Amino acid sequence: MKAESQTIRAGVLLNRKKEKVSRKYMPTLRRERQLSPGFLEDGPEEEEDTDYYDSRRSAARRRFDEDLEMEAQAEKRIINAKKEPKQNLREPASSHKRKGIESDEESPPRKIPAAHRRMAIVYDSDED
Image (tube, rainbow, N blue to C red):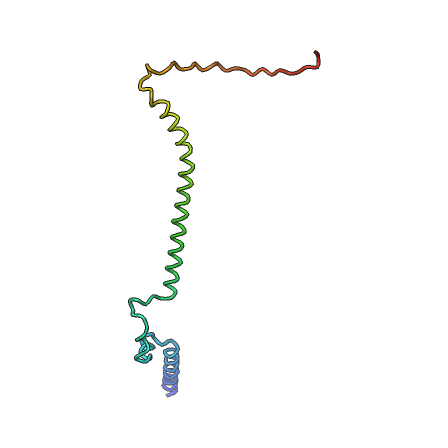
């Protein structure tokens, strides 16, 4: 008899706790049913409705992507700017020299490079 009463009492306590928890953490479906019928009529449609945080997140993500793209473009410009002066110095010099000369026979004789010369250092002396 004592065991039965304890079981019944435990069941009653368990049911109370379940009800308390279910009231505290009510599923979203039940909460939506509690709203008045005209509450959402003026609001946006479900397809149009964007979550506040999602829209902010997507805007931040878009800005981040744009910043990355701008940074990549700036790096490309820097790299191209570093390459261009070298190409400009080499290409025109060689192309201008070679335009009028079509064969080696027409070209003037090449200079023979001079042998390596030592630089003579002259010291002024006080004996004059």
